[in-house]
Image 1 (cartoon, rainbow, N blue to C red):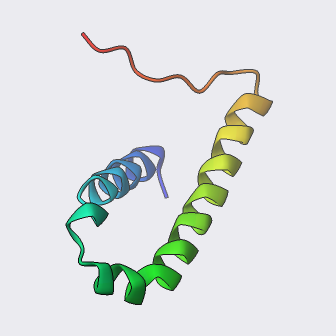
Image 2 (cartoon, helix red, strand yellow; image 1 turned 135 degrees about the vertical axis):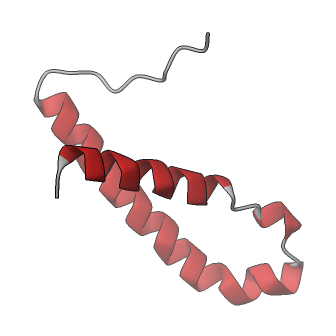
Length: 68
């Protein structure tokens, strides 16, 4: 997969996550989905940490974009 394809997929994933609004879920829905949600969040945390660690291992910093 090319670097451009990876970046497009990362942007799409971020967009999809931005659409998640757990506050709009009913208490019952949240309780029903909590296992799957927890597993997804742990998996995302693991992958994001790995990618960030790989960037840092190359001597670079992971920084928040500056708003203009």
